[in-house]
Length: 177
Image (cartoon, rainbow, N blue to C red; front, side, top):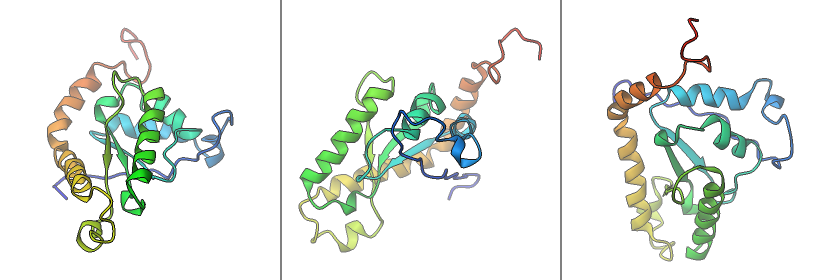
């Protein structure tokens, strides 16, 4: 790890139907506010989705629309564990479902870019067993995620400037407090 790099892993999100209220309060604290607090102080946010749960319901939807609102410049969407998929059709289904669901809640001009990652040993030991999957493309995308993580010191200055442009903790800019 580069000097000064810190990783914070939040607990997984509870995937309840969007109509369920109070999901984040069932934890004993407001999860959505906690994610927002950390996200505003982060230089890079990696949001991981598993291929068997590529939807955006419940707490995930609330985090995307509330906690990460206005922070898309820091956000990388990652489809994790693609090595657990059996074939290209399963991959396309998971990737497409995630991209489509995210495009409905993230206010971006285009469908959000989704990076794919897998376990380290996948490209070494399982290449022949999974020849139906685009292993080289997955490896390239994983390296792009690693490069973005290593670029965090470059992002830090930009994020400080961006934070200065935001009102402080929701107070109006002209409020003397």
